[in-house]
Image 1 (cartoon, helix red, strand yellow):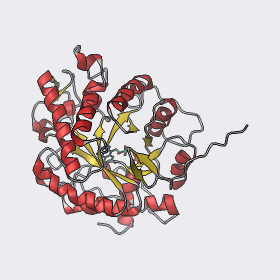
Image 2 (tube, rainbow, N blue to C red; image 1 turned 180 degrees about the vertical axis):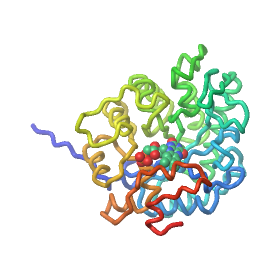
Image 3 (cartoon, rainbow, N blue to C red; image 1 turned 30 degrees about the horizontal axis):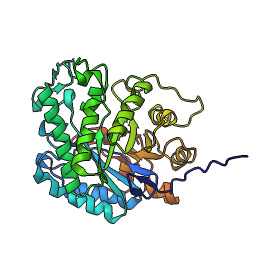
Length: 359
Ligand SMILES: Cc1cc2nc3c(=O)[nH]c(=O)nc-3n(C[C@H](O)[C@H](O)[C@H](O)COP(=O)(O)O)c2cc1C
């Protein structure tokens, strides 16, 4: 008997921990330094920014990397959830996104050994040389437990602010990623023996604090240093209560990535595609990286290469990108120029936004 495989469409809903996301398009976390207020407070610009993208049709919005302690910020104008007073401002973001029918998560983060020197001595799992040639210090066990608590309390504030869940920033070389990587985690205690333990204990703590219905996602490297290690690590994250894995890159960037010669997608995207292929668990998986045309996005979903697609620069360039994929609406394509990646005050402007008449 011939079994017909039913392929998903971009417009198909997907259920993540009991919550229905109306389509397969997620807005990736993308930090907006030029919008953050003093002391990490949400500003009206943030609210408008996320509301526009929810209105544009994204099924899920993941609000940008948000610091769990004040010394874990990228810079002074980086949004935070490290104190109760910051909660209120986030309610306006969640209300605006929910009004448009989007599920909304917030990414929570600490920079760890890559901390901005203006916030003091950088600390991570181990003492290692860091990006600026300085050396980080190894965290004590008390510091590890206190940091885990900061993640859990930030998640509680996210719940109070109306978020449907949180995403742990577990990739791109930040603190949770540093515990996973054999390059930055040289510890011989339990946090070194089990490279997933730091993240898994945070997930367990959030589940206990925020309840069974709260979505817990992690943005995780697809290869750190290889896919086999990350499959084991993520199995433990899922066992601990993680509902959704968004795959990106880590410290080793692309590990020993392989992809078919004729694959139309990027190496970054291949990390998620390979992960989904090898993963034997049941939670949804996403990929990210260079998904700049509706055709390519549809190719990924319709060929079951991942369950959702995560869109960053294209969503910054034009909130209508979701509508272009879902309904064939007009949109302005991202120029892939890096303007959005330069810091604030550098005068770089997104040419796609300028073409749309914004600025
Ligand atoms: C301006 C900008 C800000 C970003 N901020 C974050 C962030 O807060 N958290 C995160 O995990 N990734 C962040 N990223 C990475 C993106 O989420 C995404 O993984 C990357 O841009 C590749 O996707 P794309 O090709 O669709 O842009 C950022 C990227 C850009 C361009």
